[in-house]
Amino acid sequence: MSRGTWLLLALAACADGGRDDGSGTASTEPAATGTDASGPTSTGPDTGDDPPTSTTDASSSSGASGVDDPPLVCDPLTTCGVQCVDLMTDPANCGQCGISCVIPRATAACSVGQCALGECDDGWFDCDEDPNNGCEQALAPGQMCGLVCKPDKAEACNLFDDNCDGQCDEGALPGCRVGVHRSSSPTLGHFYTTDAAEAMSGDFTPESLNFYYLYSAAGAGVVPFYRCLKPNGRRFYTTSGTCENAATLEGPLGHIATDPQCGAVPLFRLYGAGDHFYTTSEAERDGAVAMYGYQYEAVAGYVWAGP
Image 1 (tube, rainbow, N blue to C red):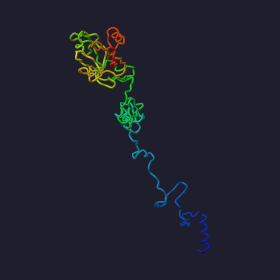
Image 2 (image 1 turned 180 degrees about the horizontal axis):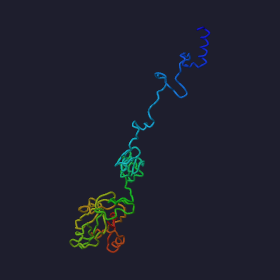
Image 3 (image 1 turned 120 degrees about the vertical axis):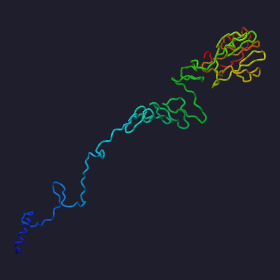
Image 4 (image 1 turned 90 degrees about the horizontal axis):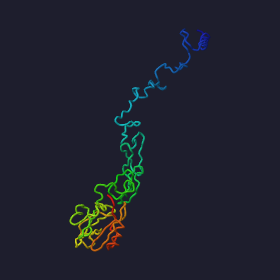
């Protein structure tokens, strides 16, 4: 082939785009890159230059099996979010989910579905038993809470108005106050005892059963009221543990108040013709002085008109 013919053939191949027309003439164009408008294709082994195409289905994101986790079963507890809780005892979910107990100056607790006080912070005390104000009283070491009344609080035998109704220890609390009977004798004068049978013994004549009341036991605000036997067989009553060094101590009649607390009234002490006389009546006191020659000595203490 002449050089001119070969040159014409080469020019024709270039004009035809380098495609093989089936004539067996090799194309002189560079190899294809393997990319066309329809997307990436591969003409040979993967060289790692292109990122691998993921074959994982999007629905598998909820789990390897493609199924949602089963619901939380808490029975007999209660489901609160992603937790199983006891609404009766959990201070973070007390009574209902999300109800969190906060107690001032104390740790919080939950009791039967109601917020309650756990333990007070150091130096603070819950004196009024009210969880709403927490540990409300700061006390120094050794100090004790004072009594606090509450409308729903039961009365106790403590010389205090526990239920805020203006009365103390009302309701004839068993064993709280004891009645003192008053008798008189032509030979032994006036006699006071808590024993009704003793008040009617010998030649004693009862003048008034349950004439007044004393506390049967010791407590804050009351002191022993002693029964003292004099050499002449008569008795008097005093807060002196030595019977004023004038008689033999027989023991406490009961416990008398030292001031007019909880509705207590004064017990007047009089003396005349070897007889000690006690009354809660100002009129009787004045009559004994004016008509029977008694001398008014003092208020022996404060007693109660009822149990």
